[in-house]
Image 1 (cartoon, rainbow over the protein chains, first blue to last red):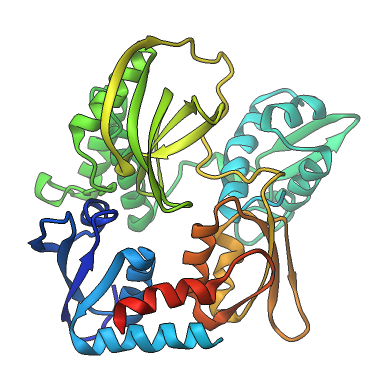
Image 2: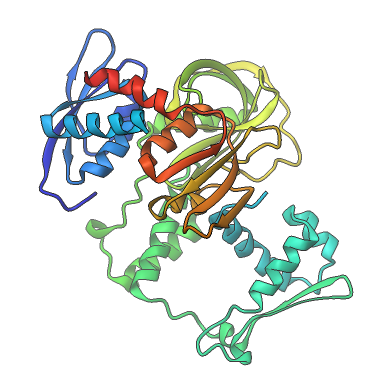
Length: 84
Length: 308
């Protein structure tokens, strides 16, 4: 989705959503499985807005780890929501 | 309840051919069959009267009429001509047929397979170019297991993730029907603890067990609907900016009205708070809650803690 230059992003999903996220993330690859049941998935992102929307669908069960730009974009977006 | 546009269209696509195939069915029979009231039926007929083909002259329009308590629909002559599909429409048909064949138990549907093969040949689609209908990834063994439980009328137990409440629970259900909608597999089942028929997304199931307990399925199983609001669900009123107007078409609404300031006000029933939180988070500042028990700021703050 999207037409921006592809960016590789890593997202941490907690144990509650880890397996579900894997099922719902077409094209994503497993970067790391952790002992607590959480999982880190790697995505190729071509639309920052669409990706942010996708990650928000997992509420606080997901966290963008990398890259810093997408992480900052999410933080800025949420700060605006909190202040609204 | 005002259904979403997709549900309305779905009803018309089923209702129109049925009415036209009958000899002027009674209004009461049509309403009962399609679960609508007479006002909705009259509105549908008025809209159909404006439907047809270019150049939209009277001979190219559908005739729809309610007279003396009976309903009549007659197709214009142009509808009797063989359909001339565009390549895009034909590929769409192939995709739809492929999706139906993908349903468990439908693998051996020879008439549909034959029709699909003929259409594919006309389009010049070889095996390597076959249309790949990608329903959400669900293990085929799980689908087979559910289908077996449906066929044998046996209760199942499963761990299920409730998207609306954001929790996992162990559930006991009587499985009635497996179906797909908008790229997802669903099980229509009687939820034993909730004492009502619900839909369960198959990709949100884990640790499914077929029990020895048998049940008798209802004779009049309602048609599967992915979501249907209950009258007891809390009412939420939102005002949507243009970037968020799609919400008014995507989900069932009690009412939709355009405001003078360009916003769209929608009134909907929402049973699960987490679902509404997700929606509002995605809409960002393009939606405002006018009425409803939801704290989107609190939701955003919970997520924000992960980024501090």
